[in-house]
Every structure is written in structure tokens, then in C-alpha cells.
Image (cartoon, rainbow, N blue to C red):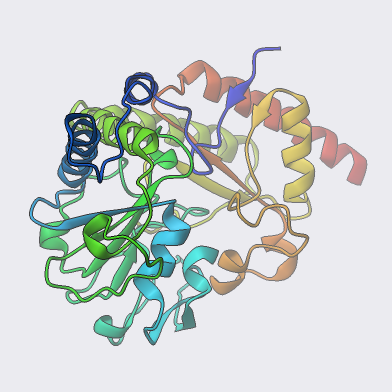
Length: 347
């Protein structure tokens, strides 16, 4: 069986550029904090990767602080602050905020006080993209990074959170991008690494992979790779809608990531669909990878006004640059066959 991977929002396959950069980094001996030639070589690799990430973010002149991932980035950016957010934020951010910002039926969020608020740029489950207000304290840009053109310098955001493995980099490395001059207290203290904001010997290999993946992701955007992906997503949704008029495509009236389709077929449990499609060779999810194993239905969908029953019938299909039209048509055919079986059981 040739499997088809359609869960890019959970993690993207490792890019060849990232793998090559990581292998090369393994040959570096020095500690980046050492002043000798070997140490300077390791430090130079880190600074090159920092510049690659900053360029991909449109953040030249900002500070890129490497962390162990977006979860640590969220903790670093949010700890000690009284921040408001919406219930649709990722769990990594939701742990640090008061979730009281209103969400409409299309997933759009209203921010009353940007300087004391967090707002994700794109939702991992629905793909809904937000308009970021000037002066926003923190934005989780993890899902948007590499899929949408970003200009952090012009966004009006003080701090942004990103992760390498969502763009084809290695797992276990992320960053906070900080507007220069923004106050940020270190949470991991000790040495003076990462401009004194995150102590500990840097993950040189992971950082090298992150930088290479960021540069490659920028090329994908420049070459129109995600516009092609959006066409495939639309083919998928149109094919399903043609044969299943009861299926609801979440957030379709709002701007969305080009690769993300979250849809609900009432009465057909999302977890049942995920298992059936997995056995047929397709990797999809029933929501965020950090919460999909939980019995409770998606709080993102509940915050958008879906009841428990409908929210429990959602699945997410997320495409990537390697996805082909054949992949999409095979998935749609398989999904529709299983829908017919499900309807037959109910008849």
C-alpha cells in the first residue's frame, strides 16, 4: 500500500535541504560559546540560520531567539504577562492567557486591547487567517510561517512564535521573533546564550536544519508552490461537496490557509473517519495533533458555535508542496466510499 500523507499541519516531512544542513552541522566540533576557531564556526552556523529565519519572516532587524519549539516560545513570550486571547488558540498559548476574546461563526476573532492580547495568525485546525491589529503583544504564526508571505517588520506585532517542523525542518526547534527593544525576561537562566534570553548550549544541528528549511520555504512561496496547493484543496472540497451536501466546510467564508480543509459530516464521528482512512493508507487528523487523542471534541469548533455532536464529527485534511492531484482524487474517492458505507449502516 502506498500511503498518502495529508497531515502537514501536524508536522511536515523533513526537507532535503534541512537534512543536508543537519548532517553537515554534525561535523562541527566546537561549542558556539567558545572563542577558538571551532567555536566560531559553530557560532557562525547559528548566526547564518538566524538570518535565514529572519529573512523568511520578513524580520530583518528583529531578534530571533531560538527555543526548543513553539511551546517553549509561547512560554517565553507569555510568562508573567496578563494576556487575553480566544478559546481557539493552540494549547501552547492557551495555557498562558485568559480566553475571553469573542469568536464568530467563521472563526474570526475580535481584539479589544491589542497591547494586552494574543492572536494567532492562522488556526491549525480550521486554517482560518486573522487580521492582526497594530500593537498586538503576541501572535502565534506557527501555521502561517512558510505558507503565507510574512512581513513581521510591518505587522505591528511585538512578538511572534514559530516552529521548524511545520515547514519541513526538524522537530524540537522553534523561535520567538521579537521586535527590537521589546522587554523579554529569560525563563531558562544560566549562561548568556541567545542574547541572554535563553540560556543553554544551542541546538546547533536543529538550528542548522531550521535555517535551511526556512530558506527553502521562502523559495516555495516565491515560486507559487502554495497557490498550486490551494487549487488542490479546492478540488478536494468541490469533489466532496458534489456528493455530500450535508458536509460543512468550516471557516470557508473566511480567509484560510491555502492547504487546510476542516469539514464536518454530521453523524459520522471524526475519530472513526481518521481510523478508517488510516487503514486505507491516508494520514489525516481530527484536529490539532496536540489534542486529537483526547475524547472531548474540538474546543476550537465549539468556540465557533458548533455543538458537541457536530464538533465531534470534524476531520482536518492538510496538504503540502509534495501533495499531488492524484493524492487528492484518491483520497476523495476513498472518503466517499466510506461515507456510503456509513450511510448504509444508518439505513
